[in-house]
Image 1 (tube, rainbow, N blue to C red):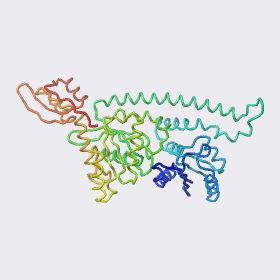
Image 2 (tube, rainbow, N blue to C red):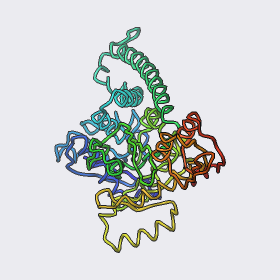
Image 3 (tube, helix red, strand yellow):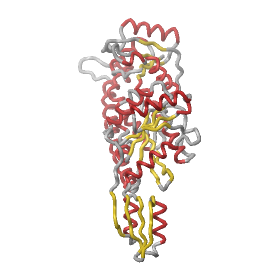
Image 4 (cartoon, rainbow, N blue to C red):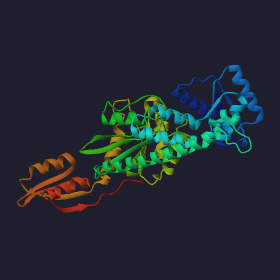
Length: 425
């Protein structure tokens, strides 16, 4: 049974059906079968039961009539609210945050992702231990008597606190390891894919890179682990493209905090590619959610290109109308399709332009016998022109810093240089 309780006077009340539909997809991803929904517009959440007394009684009767074994709220419940509702309706209660954490736990594959999810779950669980040990309450009480339930609560709190510290230390180690790995990619142009869950980030990465091992599934949170691939953009330009975990409305703050190590990729990227499901009726709300999370992570100053995906699911008239509107609202944007032949051409062109902006145009002088170095410059850079003279070969080329450094160490000398323009903001 799904419960939606938007506040009066907010935009959420107009989208309650869409929000519950998304909650139903989350429940399906977690393996639950939705048998009904219940909604109530509220002025503010009741401090004890979130919903009003009459609606709680209606919920209790619906649970009995429909034989529901689980009730899921679209909003996060306090520990006291969750316990009180369970006592009143007689069945298990979850909120949206706990449901998302449960999905992440089943989707985590790598050691890092599992540690991040466990840390988020423990942070969520810690203030709710009293509710979990409610079955021991009958042992409590009595002057001078410490019940076993209370003792167990203190033991659990201590153990969980210790485990949280251990996980944070291990994730710090992961962060340092990632920094070493990123250091090896210095000089390469890097772009990070961000977006709402199921917007098609993995499909974009798979199509651009041509890597069949990039996992793609039409489900929420199909993948959690970051994945990087080198992409050949043509015309001598390349980019390291990294897929990141998808965001969602009301993403648990514990989960955002736990995934900071993974999302460091956003801070290291030269460009953020914000992938948007152009065919989704609530794409504007989803865009705002992602932009807000990016800002929360401190990456909102990064250059961003909006990538409107899944245009293949729109009619030609819808594509034209949306394209006109998008170009007006977001000048730095492209429309693409991960399944249509040539559907990524606009994105490749935009990425080539961004790579060029980050590479200085230099004129180098090489010796006549430096054929190996010349081949390297043609392979790793974008050669604009070259000329032969008596004192050597002069070549104008766009190069990243790493390749330029190698060329200078191999005997090339700089004749002229134009600084990189920098990416657009």
